[in-house]
Length: 201
Length: 285
Image 1 (cartoon, rainbow over the protein chains, first blue to last red):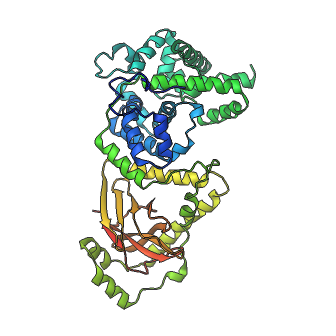
Image 2: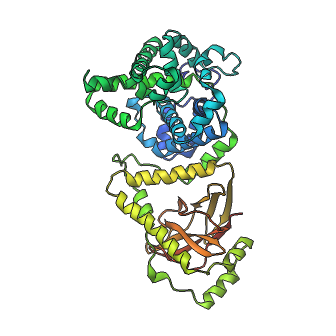
Image 3: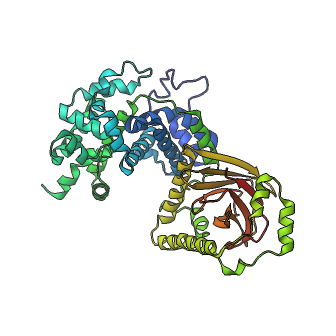
């Protein structure tokens, strides 16, 4: 089960405070019971991560905030469906955020606009030059190291799919490789990342 | 290679949301029968979340939180007790949007109209009430047709377990989209009889939503009815059951030429035109 690090036992500046740290899972349980204050706390805790991910895909800030709002409204409405046995709260929330960002890309012209604006080169190499970013997450370093273990094709395919929001057929077209190859590279690339980062359920 | 092998290859793309809708559906059927594939998908999804956590956090605007806190205060939640996807509060609320009955189409008496004008509480109400009871036939027909469409959708939808839930979610998504619109406006008004009504609207989307807080509960044979008010008169925009003191709905239809939204208490099922004096009128301008 994944949780946003640091865990309550090893607090750092971002999440610790003088008061007792309440886990996101506990907050979600309270949200499921209609606790609006708990929703506010959960929002404060995860909103920068959620928005960070969505904006990575959509680029446009205003549109990203719209999608983030949809995601949080969905969290409020569906909190009772959260099943801790299937994963941590961060997994549940970020999976939803990614899905909604991808939905937005596919349902609008934003992907086409975005392509012309950013170009495909900008998706893959971000690990290599984030030094200017004010806030670098702990996961960033882990992902960067794990990504370095992938083949070039695996890395490009995974990055375009996850951070670009491209479907496997779009990835195939962008990389000029057969779609079957992309399916395989996405799977073995993700398995490699799982093993490198020690993610197991 | 068998179909199963073919499907199993898709676990990575699935975790990355890179599948088409039909492939996703196919894989989910396969996942239901293969524990091995389920485990792999769970692990790869967790791995994808690590990729998400590696993105640089971005501070949201303060408006995002204030919007959300206002939204959730008026947004019903799914209860854990409805695993099929049904939503206890959704069905009656959606079912309430029914074709408008002829029975309540009668005009209010001249005395009633006069009373309404006397009671006008603010500038918005005064302006709205001047056009409150104008009712060209074409608009009546249009409003009834729109209402019938709504009702038809709700009835047809009941064949699917999840449809009322999905319809409620669609309405919630519209509300979310509305409050996130770049030209969103919001206006709060006290409601005669107690409580407040908040109107949220976007000119560019041509949609509005009304949120109630602390409204008196109505008897079973009465509902709150929403109206778009414009030069053409009052056009029904949906019904809110008065069974809970806080509720909301996205108004049916588009703003069109309306310049205000009003609320009346009407008999169960709603009326074609307002038959009582408005308890609140809010300007959309």
